[in-house]
Length: 88
Image (cartoon, rainbow, N blue to C red; front, side):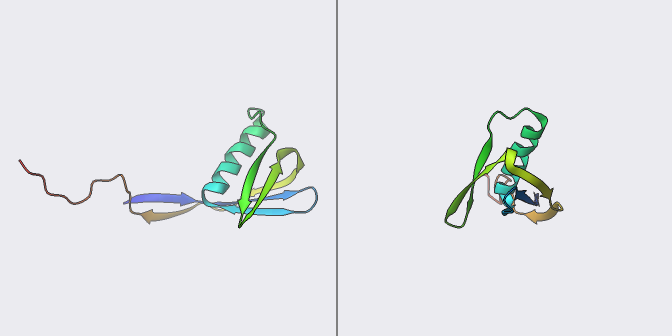
């Protein structure tokens, strides 16, 4: 078994739009925005998908960025050895 850690990430834009992301989308946005704040990211934004819509989040227009609590759950590790018989 492996531990799967997840969190949600919510950003509020200057125009009042709120984007609440979960899973890998939240991780990607969090990582890229963190690098932007540190001055290490060269891109100005990131495209996110919400349902069938796509939105461009420009980092310079973010007024609030909140990462939720990190949750940990047990998940089956697909890379782990499975029960199998070895023939000699």
